[in-house]
Length: 114
Image (tube, rainbow, N blue to C red; front, side):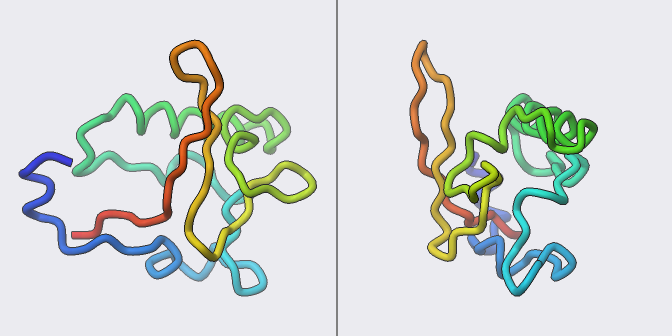
């Protein structure tokens, strides 16, 4: 994040703490089946190419009823159907193709909030 972005930042908050309850199933967030791509908004994030790529991948999966996957099958942990599932620890591995090889990139579920 840029200095300007950091100066307006109130806190880093876990997604589960700010997620609308309509996205919960049996008390845990449903991280795989209700994503359409329209949830992604640039606002204060400077790298629109990353966000637009995520939005297009999510919307493509949504349009094809999640039968044609581009990104969700590369997010771990997963259930037996290769759907990403909520991790109470807040850590995930995203398998990305970087510099000619597949790599696991660890991400957490903290989001900047202002």
